[in-house]
Length: 383
Image (tube, rainbow, N blue to C red; front, top):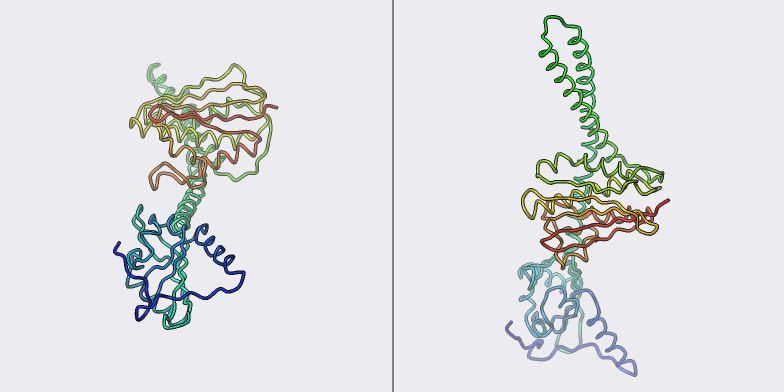
């Protein structure tokens, strides 16, 4: 940036309000502390628009050092110079102005959105006035608002899925009843050879089997979508895991993914909430499917293993997918953080999983080797 002489009108330096008495050092230290530790971008401008001071928060927000900003024109760090000049003029006329979602130039990401406050500070002498600017970063808030829109869309989709499941149940039930009636007709019908009768009976059995499967799937969707309070009870953990695999069976088959159930002889005795745990395992299994798809496109293996460890029952969900990069591993349980591209993930799955497991008195951890795979460990207290 081109350096500019930070002077006021007629070549005079901008004056600052005088501080007198023994409090002078304390006041200066206080102001320095604000500039050093504030998370907000704070800067002073003289009448020529030259930056006189710049806070550490501004350095973190824009990626420029103080030396690169102080004694330079503020126009070098704003995105829309004309809009900033209009705001500056309004500040000089009214004494204070707020410019929402104003964009500054950021060294790393191109632009940063801030709620910008400009305050006119008159000073003595011929220097006229200086302007105090305070910028509050809005990038995180904007990202959060976008995430909330996606969450709301998912919630609407969940409600729609619940209605669709009810609507599908009715014709499926009719198909099941008609297939049973046809089966009776076939058994009583004359003029059929034994081979023809056998083929028709087999076809009807297949229809009844698939209608039963449709009913099972819609019931699973309804149970998953239903907002119920956590209720602990004794249950068969292995049955929950089996239902989870069946719930996502179409996905694993279409992507040529082998799912291996490596279950101990008897399920660990648990007293917990099977519906909430099914939600956890569906999420972990879905993430494993996605990780395998990201690595190879299709094909791969997911293993679900159960065991007892001290006083805890343990479920391990392992995959041989893409793994989690080291720089992302520390944030996988952060709310709204996702390693998936926009539109593919909400950043809610793993934080919700951890919340559920911790409320049930357990813990969830993971190990990952980028390019090799990931294992999630769910531990729950045994009854």
